[in-house]
Image (tube, rainbow, N blue to C red):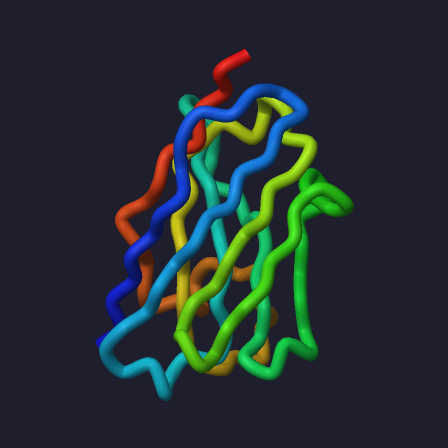
Length: 125
């Protein structure tokens, strides 16, 4: 099993920045994709960004392209989400995910078998 611990959530003003981190532990050698999903109040869960172990493949949701950057440190088994130019619609609980290789792509929630507890990002504008 893989355990995921998120950190870095908090209050952010519109136009501001925030950096989320997620550290994996346990059977980390089985991890291929790592990424982030989010759920805002009253909305469906949505994909945000994900990155393959090799870092060759990176996916972003259209809503965050050009504003968010996902990165990964395999030596630390950690994935990061740099959030810039935050907008009120980014306020949500952000969930870190990790999963083994899957041909279906990085933006499909079903391929991830490990989910973090979530970290809250709140609009303080």
